[in-house]
Amino acid sequence: MSWTDERVETLKKLWSDGLSASQIANELGSVTRNAVIGKVHRLGLSGRAKSPSSSAPRQRKPRTHSHMMRVRPQMRGNTALAYQHDLEVEAEPEMVENIIPMGQRCTLLELSEDKCRWPIGDPGSTEFLFCGGKPVESAPYCSFHSRVAYQPAVDRRRTNRPIR
Image (cartoon, rainbow, N blue to C red; front, side, top):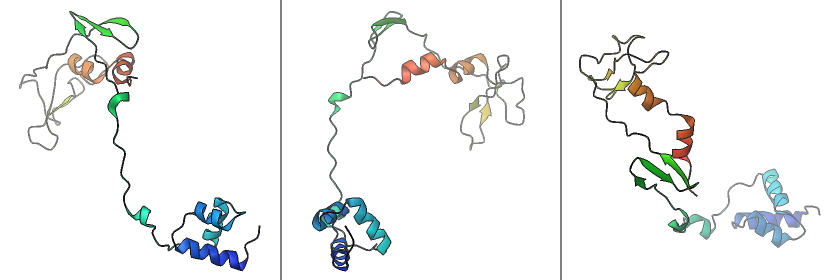
């Protein structure tokens, strides 16, 4: 198939009317959508009338939540039942809020390697401080903040796994 002057003029007209490359290919016959797109680019055609359907925003289909089922484990004493694999897993003890004495807290200027570097408060505030507790060996945080900051990979996978 060759691009005759007549076919090029038809292409230009259909393109300016807002037809898609597939529609133009069907109209011209014996030419592919990609051939139409290539010719449009080689001709430098850019400005085209918007089709009425493309100027109006599409309505989205409302999502059905039937396929999104969340299963929460039941608590029985200290045991949580994991439904995904029918395994019985011991529940981790709940962490209580750590109360940091005011005398232990320190500013950025007072911070050193022998103090916990856990930030407390809003960094933009004048009351922004650090924990200042005794850090665990080879860690920047005290034992409480290390448990918050570093979770074992198995626990992260278990809590972040999408339920199917």
